[in-house]
Structures are given as structure tokens and as C-alpha cells.
Length: 181
Image 1 (cartoon, helix red, strand yellow):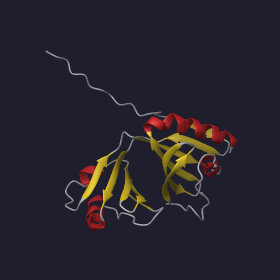
Image 2 (spheres, rainbow, N blue to C red):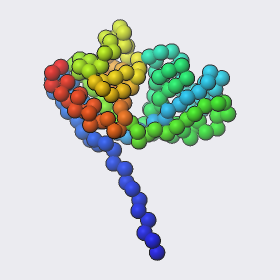
Image 3 (tube, one colour):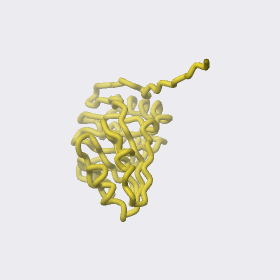
Image 4 (cartoon, helix red, strand yellow):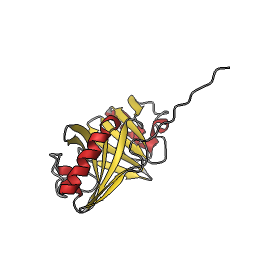
């Protein structure tokens, strides 16, 4: 009888945190993530299926009951869910769309504190002032040489999403920047 090998996934940087100098960094718990692409005709049905209205304006997001939807482009969203399965929720939608589970692709990092924006701005050209990037603002941008998705979750708090393969670079960059903030 053949033995079946089962691979166990370990979240990248699980439990890592760093604090001091007016900023703290923490790798967030694993979450369900979905890359959603849809034409305008499917937005209402997808919003109903997800239980949250898909934002349709640049730099916007919506959040409800542990599910956050970030607008990334005219027909593109990133859905982050702390407890549910957004791909399954979109399964019954008849309108033309693409819902792809990218849960294991990304790592989420919380950057919190009065020097959070300065830490991110050490490698990100985005204007992170509250006037230009208010609470709830989201965008795809860069940090150093890496593409990231950034969400402002509070006046002094951000959620950064990066690809797992770049997470060592991003963590190291943020750690160094936090020391200088």
C-alpha cells in the first residue's frame, strides 16, 4: 500500500513582529484572498453575493464583517476575508467574472504607529498624508522594487499586501525603515 504524503503549508513569517521608534510591524494571520475581475454588468450580482458593495472609485475600499474589498482598477478588486470563502460566495453569480483564490500568494503586514507613514514612505512614492490617502484608501503601488497593495486602516495604521516570494525583502525593508523613521 502506497503512503500518501500531505504537504503542510506554513505561513511565511508567521508570528513575526517588531516594535519601537514610533512604529510596529506585524505579520498578519492568514486570510482568504480573491482576485476578482468583472465587467460592470456583473458588479451588482457580485456585490450581493459577497454581502458588500464593490467600490467603483480609484483608491477606495469597503469593509464589512471581516471582509474587505479594495478597488485596484476599473474592473479589478482584491477581496480579503478573515473568516469566509469569497470564491465560493461568487460561485453562483451568472454575470461574466473571474474569481481566483490567491490566498497563498500574499502575505499581509500591519504597519501601525505615529511613524507608520514615514516608514512606508522610505520606499514608497505614494503621498500618504491623510488628505491624499485617507482612512479606507487603497492602491497598488511599490515599496522599493516590489509591487504592493496598500490599505489605510486607521489614521496611523496600514495593511500592506505583498507577494509571498517578496515577503523577505519587504519585511527587511520595513524593518530598516522603521529604525530610521
